[in-house]
Length: 152
Ligand SMILES: Cc1cc2nc3c(=O)[nH]c(=O)nc-3n(C[C@H](O)[C@H](O)[C@H](O)COP(=O)(O)O)c2cc1C
Image (tube, rainbow, N blue to C red):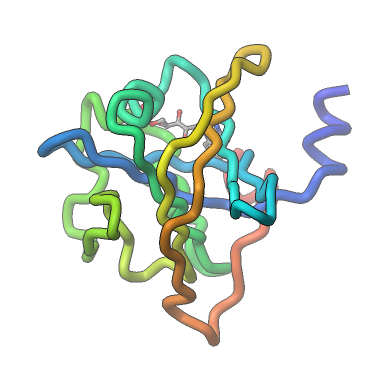
């Protein structure tokens, strides 16, 4: 059944970033969705084992960086190693969003969020954030759609 869910549900590929004091981190996530219009709420589903899980819980802020269709490698960079061990931002150009979360300059777009709610969901936690800022950085690009063959 899991294989069918993977094959049948369409997701993008995002780098979810956060900052706790002087620590910045980001992780790849594909389980991201808008869940409300007014207020504008977006959720990200994150496993408790991720370093980002603790950082978002404690900081109360995060940003969703939307990768473009040529950036699967960036998804691998942020998706295969933990920020506990490596600085995933090394050599990348990034700026700081209104909340303080890092924004990848080369991303297609970003949403900057303040954490509103968390909800346990099986082996993941849903982090629901209110969008406080958003921008399409590269309007001529196309968002990356998750394909298993790009990553596994
Ligand atoms: C394409 C792709 C999608 C991913 N989607 C998710 C996701 O939605 N939720 C999640 O918890 N982990 C997801 N991961 C795994 C995390 O990105 C990975 O465990 C990462 O190393 C965690 O980094 P951190 O420990 O620095 O937070 C995904 C990985 C890849 C490659």
